[in-house]
Amino acid sequence: MVESYIPLFVMILVGIIFGASNIVLTEILGPKRSTRTKLSTYESGMEPVKSARERFSVKFYLVAMIFILFDIEIVFMYPWAVQFKELGMYGFVAMILFMVLLFSGYIYVVKKGALKWD
Amino acid sequence: MNLSILITPVIQAAILVNVMLIGAAYMVLAERKVAAWIQNRIGPNRVGPWGLFQSFADVFKLYLKEDIVPAAADKTFHSMAPVISIAVAITAYAIIPWMDNVNIGGTTYTLSMAPNMDVALLVMLAMTSVGVYGIALAGWSSNNKYSLMGGLRSTAQMISYELSMGLSAVGVLMICGSLNLVDIIRYQTEHGWNVFYQPLAFVIFLVTALAETNRAPFDLPEAEPELVGGYHTEYASMKFGLLYLAEYANILASSAIMAVLFLGGWDLIPFVDEIALMGLAPDSLPAVLIGHAALAGKAALLVFVFIWIRWSLPRFRYDQLMNLGWKVLLPLSLANITITGIVLLLMK
Amino acid sequence: MNLDVILFALFAIGAVASAVFTITRRNPVAAAMSLIGHFFMLAGLYLTLHAQFVAVVQVLVYAGAIMVLVVFVIMLLNLGNEQQLTERISMRTTIGTLVAALFAMQVVTGLLARPTGVNTQHADAAMIGATAGIGNALFTTYIFPFEAVSILLLAALIGAVILAKRHLHEGI
Image 1 (tube, chains in turn orange, purple, yellow):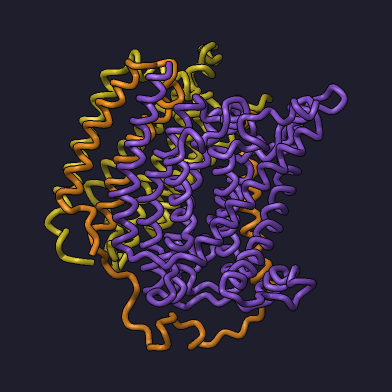
Image 2 (tube, rainbow over the protein chains, first blue to last red; image 1 turned 180 degrees about the vertical axis):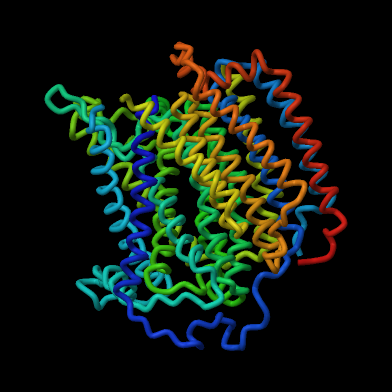
């Protein structure tokens, strides 16, 4: 079984080697004439103000959290979908129950304005 | 241990990397040519006949450019981000079943790289979700406000659309009953293409694929008027080249995946067993080559659609983009699953 | 040596190395990236046990979803002076050392113990590990836990919104 995944491991390795070798190559081939101004952070020609590491809106975290929960829901759907024809009506009702509960959660999230961007 | 199980994939990987490079090179050229055509210009025409070698000249130029890493940047992660992006993009090429097994003189040769993975489609989605880190790291490590904002926007956008992408694939799985891409193709050869049974899922998948690859109209991460270059503002030389290459490699990969999931993969004409009509065995060399050409042709067509959309539609606003993902596509794809389930149960 | 053993060794070494990296890096982003690498190695270990579905879900959910949140938090919390985060020798270190010593003892006794001879896998391992097997098990034997998960997820969803709610209207 694990043999059928060896090409995948090989490809991931090849991808990393390809990327890394390109970066090394470009560092060797390119000229190096850095000046202080050239290495300063680009801010549309202005002097950079403070660091970029600012705090951001909580919405980004919230989106990530809601994403995790829905992602887990979807993960449960794959084995169900693959076996859908074998499980028949029984499986369908079980999944509808699962989906209805989560969809009510989704409606709660939307109504609370958690997904509202402005 | 038989060494051939290691050597064969290495050779295949080398071939696929070249396919990816040449494919991306000509996609960039095609994009510029189509854009020129849409905007009534000529487009690149100086390097080689009709500008055919333009992309190679560009890559060569990128290699010879100075690699500028801002003093404030985190050097390690600044270099690591393009590597993650390109590695994830390349991995997708191993998952796509480019060709069927071929039978020459009684021996069966496996030409696709990994056709026996039971969970191939999930591996594809998993790699897409890991691709987020390339962009998030590129944005963060640059220590530039534009980059960070671009990376952040892109990450939030990609995770939002990933949900609908996964859900729209569920409809296909319900019909085909397998996560293995080869099985999905075989099912469609027999029963007709999925796009006829899952039109809504196809549209959702196409839209989410545009968003996942950060293409217009979803190219908020690199919206020039607001964010300069987005997450690759502080990238130069081939590091920029790799991020750019990964973007085009992803477009080709998602086009091929859409062709496999919805457009019948190796099947040339829907509902007609054209291979049998031509008197060919399904595993003979001509039949396999026809199948490969069919898949490549469909993928090329979808790439054209990607380019066409980019040069025809204006960019979304960020709130519109998030609303479309969460409040339109997500409920729609859930509805699609429910309807598919009801129809399948009624047909039984 | 057969393939399974070689792959197990590779993934196990990778898993341990990335785990050590995760806890020794000062830079929190480096630690998070090592943790992602660790999840990939774990997925590889699951594959050697024929658990294909679990392996890919490991990457999809842990590396692709949960770590996105962790990376978000690390990147944007603006930790500022990272030196403040390094801890002095304290009660926590002492307890940690003790627990680590206990684990080390366990590992040593495990290594010294004679092999029981039971190292072959269950005959149906490959069948159970595939997606179809999981689907069957989930919707027959484990149908109640499955439905219970939806309530758990619902509670988590509401919890997430309530936690973030008072900051919601402050704008970006």
